[in-house]
Image 1 (cartoon, one colour):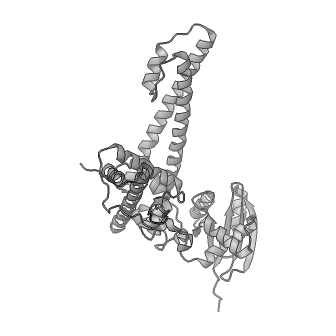
Image 2 (cartoon, rainbow, N blue to C red):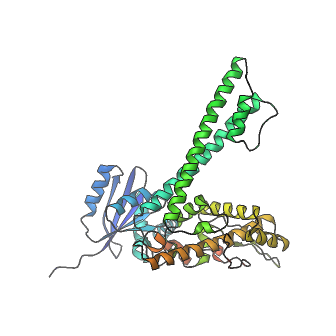
Image 3 (cartoon, one colour):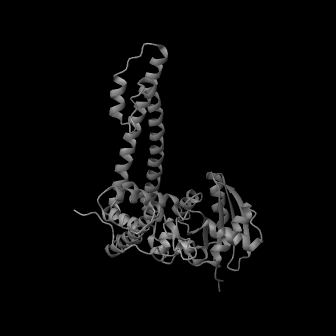
Length: 392
């Protein structure tokens, strides 16, 4: 009679050039360990070493960050992979060792221990569209930064060529007109104009790439059946970043957990008879920035968001406090829309996970456990449950 094969956990501490692993059993006894390079030979050696344990689960720390490349390689090879949040691994390392000194071996052990002790870790699955969204959003953000730098350089050159005629919001058309109006005769002026022309050409090229990336993002978002862009202030870029970073929305137990993750849930700052909340600096800062963009867009346009912002200002809240309230309201609207998209996709049975996202455990991931949630988990008093949608 054959013995039942014990399931093992392979804790992975990933780095760019190397990974350290520790293999543990269900009682956290160490069965093996090793350090491997991340090139093809090192990866193949690690896979070969892991074949000693047929029933294995890979626990990768930070699979949305430093661990993403390795996690995706494992998923493509048919391995079972779960995500271990870095904060949770850090707490386990501190409790197990009595100190917080980091080594790769300690990190790998902590990651494995988290996977053994936690049954609600998020299960990963390869999703090509989500990977494309992540790459395109990162690419577009890099292009946007490059555009700002190019515009700054071009404006500095134009200010020297045409003193007193600087444009605050310079466009390519304005820059072309300004350059065409100047014909310097000295060598310094000619060199300055030539460099300005080259900067202008680069600006035109960068803007074309930004436009192309935005169109690609919009196409993928619509192909996934997402209706996030129905919300005011949520365009292709914001929607793509939300989908890429959220993944499976069902890993969040409710809107409060989602708001804590996006950093839009308030921190209680009440003192005496003064009842107030302040901005939270926790959570996913990229998501928080996307929600901030949506909030500013709503305030600038004639939307329910602008009316809500003005109502909060009339109640005596400062501008930043009113914006924080609006951001929490938008976070709730995004969460509801993601859930609606997930439920609709599940009914349509498109053959992927909820909402077209990567199939994952229907339970909350470990990052959402009460252990990691502070007062920012409390819902913000005031916002109504009305979804801020476009009309017409």
